[in-house]
Length: 539
Image (tube, rainbow, N blue to C red; front, side, top):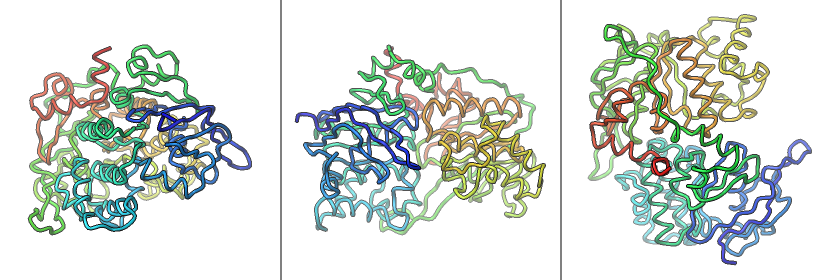
């Protein structure tokens, strides 16, 4: 059998409540040695089910109801668990999407990579520590000796994702399945990681299966792109054919919703120079202590002399690589961290040194929308409980007035009132993010801090969420601080852009100036790394 993966008319179903629901239908796919294939489609299209089938990791509730699945000569449709384990790691490696779920929070990073190396070798060996450092270097982490000693919570989201890639490489597999491998990474690190994976494909003959909602990544990186909808492959072909001449209406809809291929819009507002900013940071710095490692620094400077101003009705985007200080800036603005030096002003009041009790009334005017909607919502709370939680916490409403507020808020984010009785697990990622936005709006804030609000969502849902945020800004005059690694989103959503690197401001200006006439080499590097540009320009 020449193909490393050979799938013929595969159907996979899930049993739920006595019924069978098909997740993959009559799917055929082959992946040759050294080939890169990308699968794109919305949530629920069957992408992850297909990946789990290739890995032999389908849950007990799933069954292969028809077809054949061969991986490196092994028939996984009839394989025992022992035979599947022999394939996992050594033949097929996985880079999962969510590093906080996939990494053990109680173990140091080096210990977790060591586990994968020892499983691949069969026993502990003398060079394991050197191999850990080498793998961390390969995936682009600086100070690999220090990183190996740190715990996952001490790393940024992008750093944690690179640790997962190092673990996947530990078994030296023939096929790597990358399930949204760069959704948490900024564009420059994204490019480095994907460049590295492609180098492995080229130098070692490794095959790569990329599962992504980012059409720019798919068209830039793959030899072949498959578009899935409701468990079926509706279209496949070379990237240029998919992007330039899509045949299926669903493919055309995905392309139309992708920020990477959208025409950059003009900003909606002009700031009056006499207007007072609602939120200001003046020369803010933040330093964190690090674990003591011989020859390494004992402190990490996360921010250094950061100054910014946010005006009513404006969207200010903060961009930069992982570890540049973006999330630290949000935490300081929200009063969750105290700056090591500098000042934070809300309207015309210095709030830098307010105690928790003193800062609390300001939280009615300053709210946060987090990156992961599933992590942001209490899984035990209904949608109603989540939305009204801020109103209850501040003692603002109760009884019938509270119920009416919940109905108004869920309608404002374009969800049906019937969803109020549902739990988060009964909603999609995009629906959960709308609930998180409704909760943030409950106190009628003047400022929303948006920490990667659409990075975990597929492109069509991204488009809906961004359109909703723009609508809310027009109607309510809310100011946004948007932290994002997706410069395509920033280009189509922000008015002002601030570029951070290693805690310092590289440059700041209007979205037109930053994207059309960047002043620094670093900003030009960020813009050049936006996925999908080369294919768009060629088209």
